[in-house]
Length: 196
Length: 253
Image: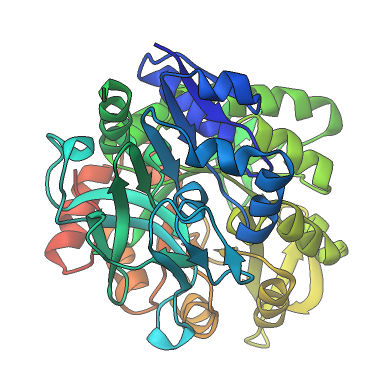
C-alpha cells in the first residue's frame, strides 16, 4: 500500500511524512508524475502562497495530474485551498475539484489573522471522521478559508462558520493540519490511509 | 471554539534541557525529546525550543534534536536561538520545525524578518523580544539573552516586526522571568491589544491564577512557561481544567 506525498514548492511536506511514519504508514515524497499516478493514495500538503503554488503545479504539469487522480486524495491546508475553484489570495484560479471559493478572513472582525492555534471541528460527516468526536480540536494556521456548501464534511467557527473539511468523490481536503493535531490528527490520517 | 494556547518552553544547552532564573544559574531539567513527548501527551498546545548554546559548531546538534522531536511529537513546535540567516532557518524547517524564532539578529538587522517571511511565509516567523522595564517606566529591548540593553522601545520594535512580516510575537519580560510572581500584564496587554498578530506572553508564570490573569486581563493569545512545568509544580492538565472553570477557552483532551 503506497502513499505518495506530492512534493512541490510549498513548505511543511516533511512534517506530513513524519506523521505518517509515527502512525506506521509507509509513504514517499515525490514530484514524479508516474509515481504519483500509480500510488494507492495521494497526499497534497502545503503551507505557502496560492498563486506561486499554482504556477509551479502548472509548469510541472501537476495540475492536470492531480485533477485526474482516481485514488483517494487528501489535500491539507493550502493543498485543500488549491483543490477549490478560486482563491482570493492573489486572485488565483485553482484546480476546481471542489466548487468552493476561498476568501480572506475579514480584517474587521476583531480576530487575529492568520488564525493560528487550536479550534474545534463540528458537523462531522463521512468515513474520514469515523470515530472522531464532534468538537474535537485540530491545529489551524491560515488566513484564507473555503465557504460552506454541500461538499462540507466538517465546519469550524472563526467569527463565522466555514469549511474545515471538504469531500467530493475520491477527493478530500482538510484546512487544519492533521500532522500537527495530536492524537485526533493521527486518527484522521489513519482513517485516510485505510480508505478504499 | 478557538482556544488560548499553553506552551512549555525548553531551553536547550548542549542537547539537554536547562532552566535558570533571570537568564542565569542554569539547572539540568532532562532529555528534551522525552520531555517534549510528555508535554504533548499531557495536552500542551505547542512547544518552544530555545537553544542557548547556539554557537556555530553546535548548530548541527540542534538540527539533529529538531529531527528527533519532529519524529516523536505530534503538536507544532518552534525553534529559536542564534538564528541569523535564511540558511539557518532552511536547515531547521527541513529538519521538521514548524516555526522558528529570531531575536538579537533581527534587532541588529531587521531585514532578516522580511527575508524569512518572504522565503518561508509569516506563519513560521516568530519574533522573540526580551524586554525590561527601566526606572523611567519604559520597556526597552535587550539583546544576547538579556545581557545587552538597547535604546529601542519594545512597542516600537514589535510594530516594526509586524510590518516586516513577523507572524507572532514571543514577549519575555526580564523583570518577571524566573520570579514566579505573574506575567508582565501591562506590556503584554499593550502589545496583544494593539497588534494584528498573536502575542505569546512569557516570564513570570508561577501559579494557575497568573495564567488566568494574562489571558483575561492582558488578552494574550498564548502563555509560555518553563520551570513550573519541568519541575512539575503545575501540571498541564490541571492548569487547563482550572482555566476552563474560569471560562478561558482551552483545548481539553
